[in-house]
Length: 121
Image 1 (tube, helix red, strand yellow):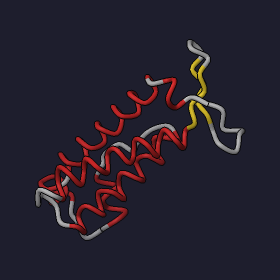
Image 2 (cartoon, helix red, strand yellow; image 1 turned 30 degrees about the vertical axis):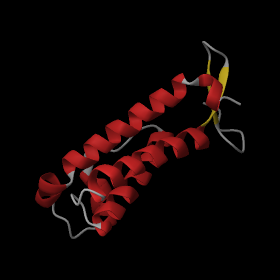
Image 3 (tube, helix red, strand yellow; image 1 turned 135 degrees about the vertical axis):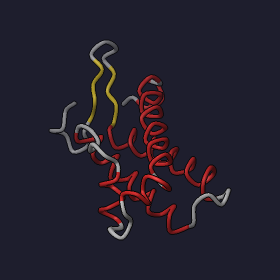
Image 4 (cartoon, helix red, strand yellow; image 1 turned 180 degrees about the vertical axis):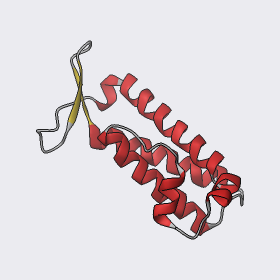
């Protein structure tokens, strides 16, 4: 990864392909937010406020992924957004959702990196 540029890039040595980090993360984040809305908000599994909280947590996770990795314990992302949610409530209501959406986001990043012609510079 070369962060010296105004727009940081990832270079794949094997294919000599450059990837724009902001574009990759934006595309992956859009995909996972759509999944959140379709699978949870539109089906009534989460309220609008809960959906916005999860979306904010996913945005923080993406920022952390760009910096090297997510925090251990996803509860910390929810706690930083709404400290009134206890760990027990988090585990019962949000843990599986957040864990699943993080997995979707990571898979989308891997997929985008494998589609070198569309996202390369």
